[in-house]
Figure 1 (cartoon, rainbow, N blue to C red):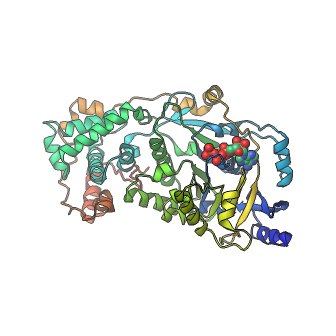
Figure 2: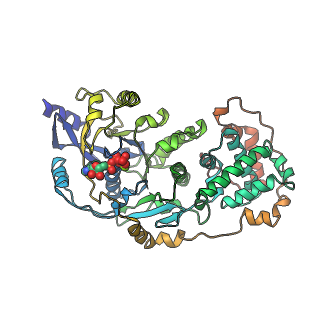
Figure 3: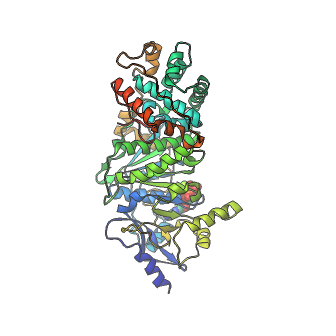
Length: 508
Ligand SMILES: Nc1ncnc2c1ncn2[C@@H]1O[C@H](COP(=O)(O)OP(=O)(O)OP(=O)(O)O)[C@@H](O)[C@H]1O
Ligand SMILES: [Mg+2]
């Protein structure tokens, strides 16, 4: 009976092409090494979710996925929030538990190390610091970082536009600060009026938020050299390079970190051409602690995440979100995640129980498991899984015993990370900031007092105030045809077409 059911479930995971091996089907207290649970590589651009309570095996699942992607020649970008993914760079150590698990899940386990680049977001500590200029980062993501409301967000958009138009490079926070200071000063009054719709009070709020960010050390991330997205897409000796973003101890604001991750995804999105359906993805991106990205996000910001996730698929990029509860992810995003690896959930509090009931509802029905019971009784390194088959249909729900990672299941420590990073060619490229002439110097030299000769200042057209605040003012303002044509003519008058993508990042 159980054998037949196991076979039936496993049949749903049969593939003709290459696949990630997650583990094997577990049913009625038994697991059959030949009943494989896997995700076809060709379906990884249909995205996924890894969820579960703390300590249930989420990070090890990410480690597993990253290892097999790397072996398949697919580069990986992932955040290493707790530092424990750094073990990917070292072979694992065998012990009785590992050997037993390998036998159980039919895995020819062997200790293996993978090529890893250790990156940090601007922190010059141990990993290679990567940076963005503010011009590149754009006003939308910066608004999220600064915690601005919709009105302030739209104001920041106009300030960026003013600088873009004058070819004032906003390299770091100092540059933006000097632009805002100029606009709110006596000599900048006329410029401020020219922008239209910017009150100096709002500009003042933005300035304070910026100063706070600097006080928290958030300014280190902004500057040159800018990251080249090609550096995240490397394959060495046939293995995809795993780029790990280390969260340093000084980085006290994980929310900031998650917005920077979104920037990375937006950069990749802008950088990559359309690719159509591929045998395997060009890159897979893992968003750990994904709840940080979604909490307190504006409707416009959430819409953009949804859009990016939807569109990046055709560029051959897979996105995996990792979080404690699937209910942390907005429904519009959740419904686009083809693979689900759900580790154990807790059902202690009424809130837990609600989340459990909602999670059960997101699964296809299964005659083989009672999902609410299964989800609360999963062991460590086990998960309730459903993915997309090669045909794009949801596979049968499987309780899976998962494989053990082949690399080290522990952190390697700051000294080892430093040694690895300093030995990387990327260190020479990104290790030191460069300081070129930017808005700060230009404004200090009072160049900005007169508009560039070939760029006559044109007043932007009046835009009716949107009625619904939460609809995303920036979006509404920038999608107004009159404003669009103004932006186009302004940009070409300035002799340089700065266009901004879905997330307001600069198009290359
Ligand atoms: N697939 C697996 N194979 C072998 N051991 C595992 C596996 N998954 C988890 N474990 C064991 O369980 C421990 C906790 O797993 P992990 O660190 O992945 O949990 P987590 O869900 O990421 O927790 P947190 O939310 O605290 O980050 C691991 O250190 C390891 O000992
Ligand atoms: Mg973890």
